[in-house]
Length: 327
View 1 (tube, rainbow, N blue to C red):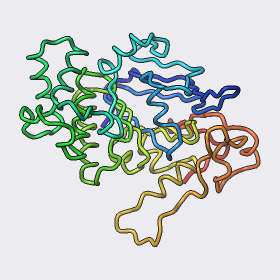
View 2: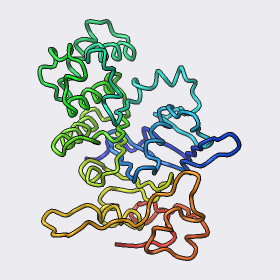
View 3: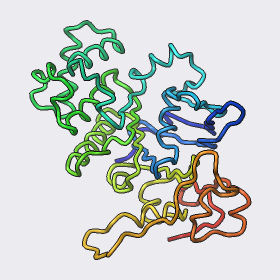
View 4: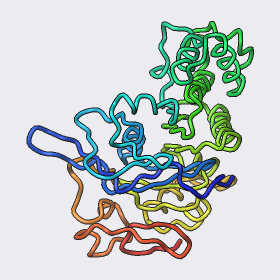
């Protein structure tokens, strides 16, 4: 699937987020820059602790103390939004930007019916009367593949399966007709067949509604299936960003290569999958130089001394690595 427009819908420029302590601070995100066009799915991938979810929270203004944005800019539909008041930002969430959270049980109120939650969300963001909101709620449930949609308005979250709850969360994200959807690990804890259905649903939304999608995941297989472009994150920085076919087929950063090599090939007979040695450094304990260098099999002396800057390769991929390593 290709993006529907060349103009960026969301643009993040030099985003920096820090974790504040009483007398010190630690960098959580450093110089993160991204853009998404209408109709495009951008996959953001990396291990737990890479900063993927913090990036999503920063976009929609949901960073909670001790996290705070200390520099950078976030532009949505030609308007800078990181400087908006909390009241204006609340209106933008849902109406302009929808969020699909990782755990539908935490995104849905267990004591209210699905219908009540959908109808109230629709009325909040669109201002329609109750009758119109009911019809829109039924339409949304049908759109995300909930059978007997009108009857299920009276059901509670616990009466749905995990996959169906996640579909309801997608419906809630669509209730305000957003132009951008941030999906934070939307397939976690779902079985493989349900994962495929949720990914197909997000792909359908991007194509039919011309909405931009930021798909946050740790699963390179999901990226290969759904995304147009991919941003690989490590320890709060973007290390490689480019078209999926370029990054997955010819990854240049050693971390990207490690992630891609962990995807099993159909028919391959392996005793074990390749692994990246070591672990992601903790926030506040980043090594000098490139944060990946202690785990990197191709590190150079400079890697332990100076963080690499980003450069754009002839194929359009943006890379932050001292040694360009074709695969």
